[in-house]
Image (cartoon, rainbow, N blue to C red; front, side, top):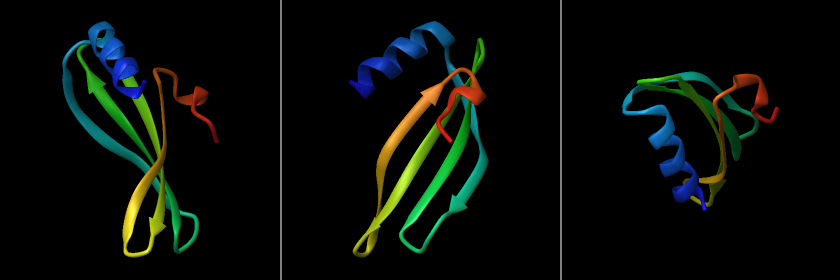
Length: 74
């Protein structure tokens, strides 16, 4: 589902021109969040990643994206 949503967004927003880390927060030793700005030809996209440290590696447990920063979940 995420692949289809991302492909649909890229057809609308155009080529990816880069990305910027907007914020990163280690909420505990085993949980963190990061928000990235994806720069495209037509508009910005915002991605929020939730990370969990499972044993000895970090795993992405949730991904949200939207073209409106304030619409990302808190």
